[in-house]
Amino acid sequence: MIGVEQWAEIRRLYFVEKRSKRAIHRLTGLHRDTITRALSSEAPPRYVRAPSGSKLDPFKEWICEQLRADPTLQSQRLRELASELGYSGGKSIFDEYVREVRPRFQVRRTFQRTLYRPGELAQCDLWEPREPIPVGYGQTRRGYVVTVELCWSRVLAGTLVFSKEPPDVLWGLARSLERIGVLPEKLVWDREGAIHAGGGRPTDAFAGFCGRLGVGWLILAAADPQAKGMLERSHRFMRTNFEPSRRFANELDFQHQFDVWCDKVNQRVHRSVRAVPVERLELERKRMRSLPERLPDLDRRAVTRVPQQPYLRVDRNDYSLDPGFAGRRVELRVSQTQVTAVVLDTGELACRHRRVFAGGLTITDPEHERALEQLRGRRLGRDVEVETRPLARYDALIPA
Picture 1 (tube, rainbow, N blue to C red):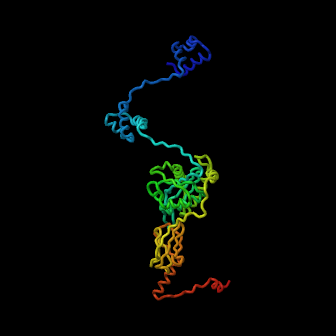
Picture 2: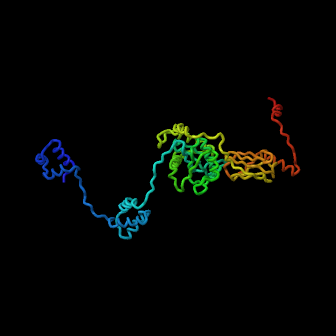
Picture 3: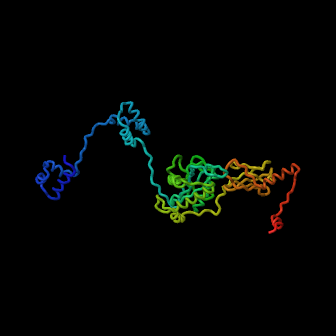
């Protein structure tokens, strides 16, 4: 058998130099039949080893039968069963054959490429940072980021919340949409508890939120994260690019750093669309509606009576109220930043506190504490009024 180089030389002498077979025979010393076969062969010669039997061959049909009965059967288990029947071959050849024939018996899920229209959809989800968020008083708390990404322009925004309850999730959603500045036609959610009421229907809170904004919704089927794969990839990017080597003083610092990071990401060239998201957003705005002047009111509200011990429990903390309103009914209003209570019959302010996300605390307004001391002194017969003099009077007594 001749090599590839000899085969190429024979064809060059015959087709290029126009040598006869007899002349090629004199130059190369090859038999004329060999020369004839080389000239008639369009492909270079190659050595093909005669196939020899494999230890796997007797088990190939058996493997197919097992996979036909159960396409999910693992290769390791199949190999164990084959060993009990006498298989003594290697692991690699067995696993490779199983990998090759399994698709014949297992229907694999396929996906089509999704194309988005400008202003059509925004994907929404909750992303949980790996580390708890510092919330002051030496405490940390598990946090969630309500993320929103426009499907066409790929503009991203997110808001930190500390629970998955509807008021918090919807407040985070409203703030994220406010950061983007426009409204899509529909909001795409998976079956999050605050969003999904069962059977693909929205909760009353979510439906009311969408109704007030005038947007639609699309709740995905169960166990279908691929339908929201664009935002899932953004979540992976947050874990690998936003989280590493960052430290946060408190929840406000976390939100500030995340907003700055989103602004930076939105000004980079996005790998999928090969364009800058904020530039695409300017084109997308033409097909989207502006936000209303006032976003939906998502504060928690409750009517309660001021107890004799004038404190109310809100999110694991006790907040003081004016003890002068003991026994009166007040409307409690809890936002993401404040806890306020207003007396129902007169509209007087019973308390206003900055909301604290740490837990197990008793938060007392100094005015409420003084009022409690005065009431206690009256009960004990020690009602003493102390004059509070203006500082200017002391300044006049001290020589300059």
